[in-house]
Image (cartoon, rainbow, N blue to C red; front, top):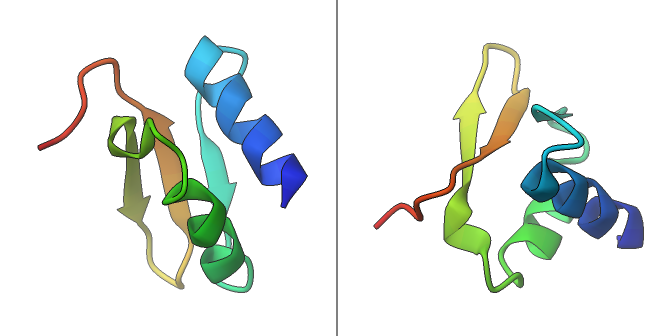
Length: 62
């Protein structure tokens, strides 16, 4: 769980361009993500097969 927060922090500060989460990890990852204050700055794009690619947006989604 702590590694998910570290990955999200890296994405936020620009050390990563995106985070790819496979369907086996999705629920554990999302549980960490939704607890963050900056949750609405992350955008997940679902791909075929259940993979989700997350990116950080400067402007929060509504």
